[in-house]
Structures are given as structure tokens and as C-alpha cells.
Length: 416
Image 1 (cartoon, rainbow, N blue to C red):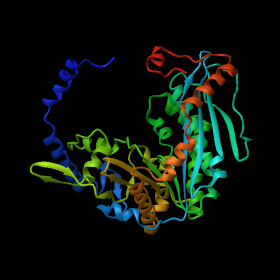
Image 2 (cartoon, rainbow, N blue to C red; image 1 turned 180 degrees about the vertical axis):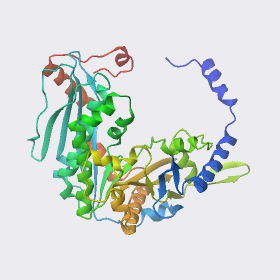
Image 3 (cartoon, rainbow, N blue to C red; image 1 turned 60 degrees about the horizontal axis):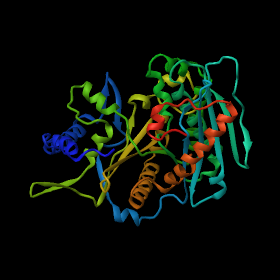
Image 4 (cartoon, rainbow, N blue to C red; image 1 turned 60 degrees about the vertical axis):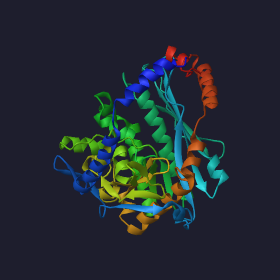
């Protein structure tokens, strides 16, 4: 039902009482003060959690000139994993299916057709054992079932993470030899969703400690970094939606005024350029702007390059080579922020770092969004609504059970 106009106006007029334009201008000034005074480096409890890889700086690059630049890499590959999202059945099964795919530019149709599928299952019944080994199907593709450890909470989080990260990491490793110049993962370069389990309640930290499946995932991502480093082929992650709050949380603990909801809002105001004409602020949109590269040990970023990882994984390089490094890119045309992540083993080399940075800048300039190989990988890996519906109907027949749905599924059109 559409909101009645009188009530719409009544709600909208409340916003007129909040004079926030001046506040936003002050926030931009505050962001630049924080940038200049706190990030070179940023400490938390005496530990360096964020530091420039070289110098603290903000840069800009003209969008039209970027679009005309020569490519830094002859070929590019992208990788993503999509899922149906966790589903609960009336017989107690909780299921998610992840489906990983790799894209390439120029296109490679055989590579595009290859998939890695992982179905993760959780049940509170202690009798059945559903796990399988890898098996091939359709030339060039593989699949398996992962039986998630039995837990009384977070079942949906568990099956989702196990399916998604097993599929993504396995597909990347299986096709590493197909990548000759640059691989971009769609999202962070490490499985941060699982790393965060260490700090969530009591169930997930125990699972992080005990699960062989978690250990396999961690080992896969370390092997991925080492495989690409040995081949001298850069590996990076392209983060489209930055949700981290580790920087502003650390600043707040220091007593610094940080009005932003998350790190992305802070970086947006650091990187936005504008001018004031006749008292009106106007954003400048001719250039992409970006930060220097940072070494991050904040939150889950600290794991793979830190001492704690020694308990779970073997690393062939010095631990600091696995550190997360990143730079942030701001596109003023749509007021969007993106992040490039890469292990330090790649970005410590200035030439490699600049090539990754320049190629991604060009891709953003042309596409007004993520690089083409990222969009293509996302499209290949996505399991659409119709396919999800058909799969769930098939699962209901196989499990001899129906989806355990509630009224919200019907109300919001989420039922299948």
C-alpha cells in the first residue's frame, strides 16, 4: 500500500528540522584532519594496526586519460562464487550450495564453462554422514558435498561460509595455471567471513579451532598466495562494498570524533574533491582519486600475516609477506568507493603495485564500476532466482521434505 500523501509529507518534513549540510562540510574537514594526524601509522593497544606501505598520500587521475591508457596486463582473470543462500528444510537439514566460476579477458569459453560446486549440509541428526570427495561432472567441472560440523547455533552462517569459501578457493587453485598475468577475486583476498568466527560468541570460535573444513579453507588461501607468488603472477581482491569499521572503531577508542558509520564513509570524505560556488558545494567529477597503499593488521586482516596463524597453517614465506595491503579508490561520478586488496608479497614490489593500481583505475574509468572481469565472474557464478527455485524443488524431492518457510517469506515474495 502506498503511503498516504499527508503522512508522507508529515514524515519528510521531519528531515527539514535536521540541518546537516553544515555538519557534512565539517565532517569532510574532520576526515582530512584525521587522515593527516592519525594514520601514519595508526596504533591500537600499542600495536601498529594500519600503516602506509610507503608514504601517506592522496592522488588523482583524470578519467578520460585513464580510459585511453594502454593495458598494464595482456590478459586478466576474475573469480567469484555465488550461492543460493542457506535454506532450512522441515526435516532439519540446513543447506547452501556455492558455485564458483572464473572469467577471462580476452574470453575463454572453455574456462567460463568450468565450475566448482560445493553443497554444504548441516543436520542435528548424529547418524547420517553426507560428506563426499571431489567428483567430476561435465568436462572441466567438479563437485562435492561438505557435511558441516553439528552445532546448535549459527547453522546457516556455517553452511554458507563453508560452501562459498571451499568452492572459491578450490576453483582458483585448479585454474591457477590458466592465469598468466593477473587474477582478481571478487571480494577480499582472504576468507574474512570465517576469520571473524574467532570473535563471535562461543560456538563459532570453537568451530574455528576444531573443524577440519575450516583448516582446509585456510590452507587453500595460503596455497593460493604461494602458488601465484612462485609463478610471479599478481593476485588481488576487488572489494565493491566496504563494510569494515576497524579504523573508525580504533579512532573512537582513542577519543577521536568519528561521526562516520563505517570506514568507507570516512575514506569517501577524505578522497572527495569539490569547490564552493556562491555558497553551494559542488563535487568535482573529472578525476578518480585514491589513497596510497596501506598495510593492515586491523581486525581480521591481522590473521594471515600474524603469529596466531602458525597454530593453523604452514607458511613457506616470512609471515609479513601474507599481510593484507590495500588502497582505496573513489569514483565521484556515482559517489562510489572501491578497495583493492593484495598480500604484501605482491605489493612490496613497486612496479607490480603500480601496474595493479593503474589497470584497475582504467577499468573503473571505462566501466563506471567494477572491472569487466569482476562483473563477468559475478554473472557466471550467480545462481539466479529461477535456477534457485528449480534447485529447491529438486532438493525437496530428494530430501522428501519441504522448505521450512514462515510468513515473511510469503509477505516479501521470498518463498519458492
